[in-house]
Image (cartoon, rainbow, N blue to C red; front, top):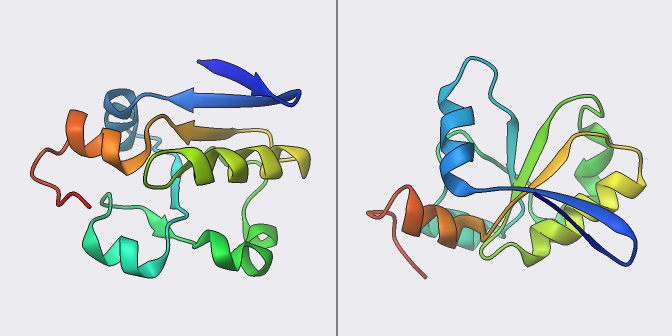
Length: 114
């Protein structure tokens, strides 16, 4: 699904669809932009923790041609990151709709909530 805020496109993926993609042969690069203390509470297996507070130090290291799925707790911070990366020329940037909380509710109900 694609939406737009301030004229910037935002492509989103539903948690169950992401679970299917992560289990497949060509999974996307999953980036968790929550802070380290949040990561320690719960995280999606295979996700890379790149905190939003440190974005100036890591965004240039990402592969501009890779499919990136970005998530946070509820999807707001990751949506901002997706838009920023799109402005910087990244082509395949996707936001996890509802963040890790939606993932917990729809895919991994035993995951700790916070």
